[in-house]
Image (cartoon, rainbow, N blue to C red; front, top):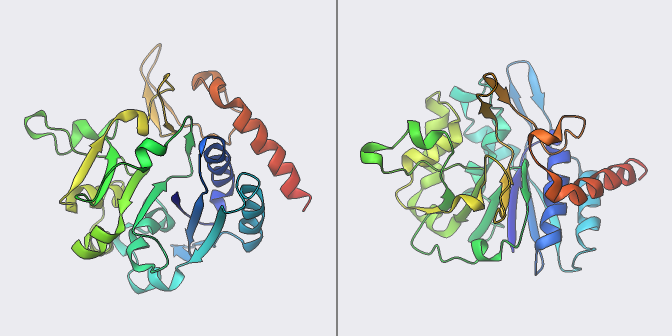
Amino acid sequence: MNILFCGDNKIQDGLLISIISLMKYANESLKIYVLTASSFAGSKKYVPISDKSIKLLNMLIKQQNVESSVVKIDITELTERVPPKANQNTRFTPNCMLRLYADEVDSLPDKILYLDTDVVCCSDFSDFYNQDISDYEVAGALDRYGKWLFHNEYLFFDYINSGVLLLNLKAIRKSGLFTKCRLLCQNKTMFMPDQSAINKLSVSKKITKKKYNEQNKLTDNTVFRHFTTKFKFFPYIRIISIKPWETQKDYKELNNAQFEDVIDNYQLQVRRFQNE
């Protein structure tokens, strides 16, 4: 199974938890690719994830299967060539948009599963990964809030969340989807820029069940739990944004009992990594 993550050195905790959860449920080897880059947003500098972190993650994943691997790909040169100028100073960092350069990386396979690093695997995901997307550029679940705000003419919902995407890079390279998305992000400021660009420009999206990108709460059939920001309205209106690695926060709010073992393993590996 080919898996894609993207980000800078600040994704290490989320990346570790996501990989541990994938190891728990994968029934075959995992080929994990991490796209990273050095970038600037105003006075802020973002640096690539370290080689040491990748080395330790590679050692960890081979405990699940010796044929599994974690590979770092630094695409700083690519991002500098077509930077997302119009969106560099938004609340979304430049490295949030690295997935849009995947088509330019020749070493990436034609079919790959992209995951945000705040996504935790909760059950066997082989049925999602192995689905036929030969006629589609991307496959993903609807965005919990965005489906009501965008592209809902005649109540036809087609606005997908980009945190869990099965990518047909062969089709994307042929259609130029990500090339168009990069240019749009370079020239137009948008809310959730890469997600908006993919939804706006994709001509062949496959809408999947929400269990493959559950953005609200765990259910008995959840496959991927995505820790997105959400709103609570009772007993008062509030915004909840808790990530899997923020173990000091109130986990009762998110009902995380189903993957306490993943979090325990994460904390164990953090201590181990610190001693390496």
